[in-house]
Image (cartoon, rainbow, N blue to C red):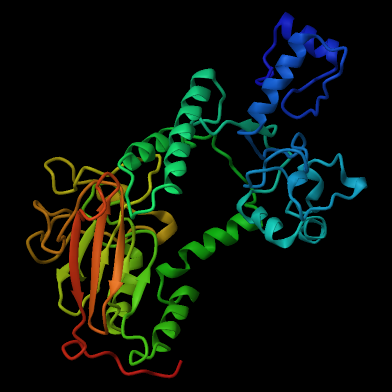
Length: 416
């Protein structure tokens, strides 16, 4: 019944109790209902706690009563939401304007701004799309099955068990089961292989988001101009350490995502180098690097891995025999397109990948974990990295990062 499958038994139940769609109808239990029907509705309540809705044409999602707005509860359960009686039976399609975009004036009049802003992450409904559909987070395609239900329940129980110990253990600690849980969560995450959605005219919220994402890839972009102004405004007498952070690493020797942000590096690296940025956090640790070479004045690139995703851990390195990716497969089109050409000098000259671990890569390991940066004074900082599975006090890596301002003079400040 959850999947709207056809069958004599299912049709009889729908007709007897007047329910056309178990997923979008609010069904009340009556005293005269059969025990079977009461049991089905009881299970329905438990399933609804975990599923969410994907927006299609917006005609089946009840605006207030189901989870669809990237929240862990429906709007009706939010304490700061007051539902006007005239809108009680509205669907999501009711908060669109005539141009096919979200009606922001209407949305903000119904929903607090800190909630309505979440609409930016959702494409508006379209009459050309398929029906809205519920998705189950335990399956990569959002489909429900008993096997996935048990798998999801198991990982939830394991994580909850870890969290319950968090509040009773009064010494600093690291959970040994962390990597295991991260991998399981990755296996039940939503997949990239969702049905392709094409737009003749891209919704405004999506086009603006994509445009903003590539602004930093070009020196004439607004993000680059902002970066230049921001770097020039830093008084290094007051703020000796300058740390930058973004998602995609410039220097990574793993095959996965190899040199995919090269356009961003080409556009911005000189500026960060000129202003003496000390440390760059992305998400393996490199050395002081500038233009793929060791440089005493270059920033230390620290790439700390992640907490688990659908791709799982990166373990293959680009210099391994037969593992160097084809250049055409490496760029991320949302970060400026293709800029990663063969190296022109050094041990990898005329090649796209090194044939050994590069000198600029000081340490790398495939393991989930966390790091701690302790700034000791104006010139020394301590970085320690801990694997999830290690006990506290056993660092997987530790280095002192030393600033040498007398050796690496900064560019004079200019008025912008």
